Image (cartoon, rainbow, N blue to C red; front, top):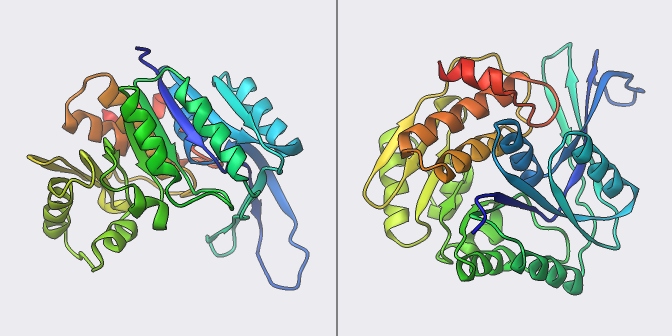
Length: 304
């Protein structure tokens, strides 16, 4: 079997990040320092894995001129990719940093509608892709059934690949128990699964372990923002604090975390070492501008 990590993005985007002196209603907001990145959860994961020297393939639904732009940017970045063509047009997401307030504004369109036939094409393509890990990250597109990621999990299991999932809402809960190797919820997503608040670290660690023991997933990586992250299995749970960094953006930080975690696990590293790399990747991402702008040298510095 191939050692590569295949990522899946069913609702990719052209990500535009820009600066503005002030964001005010009713005014024409002049922006500057514009940056374009190929975006969408799985694409972000693949970009970071590629930066860290891992073997990857970004598989994604591509449509319209914006889809061609995503393809072009990935080619320029030397990230291996494969597109499944759709009739709709990929979305454009916009992030604006307001210099006067220090606040970040994110505008995320719903994206194109994917027909049942197009969704079936994505699944059929996935059945013929060689991978040690399949990583599905991001929201489903309009028109897709809530159990789509559960079907991806079943395909991964049938092919002997491990499956990592990072999504939210019904697509997340519908996938629980479908041989998910690694589930990466945020704290709010984790609490939505449990149906209650989990306010302190000790409870978060305990409940993550219990959720694994229930059969929801083999591992759960719970991200806690500035409080770091937890990695739980049925028999072990560990916590890694986040390094103190100056955060400039949150776009792609969770995907960067997931990239580091899966890459380390695929390389056979211990859970603690994998979590350490994941937290360093997430911290490197928030220091940059644009989407999932992780540099190998920055990660090495944070690990040191």
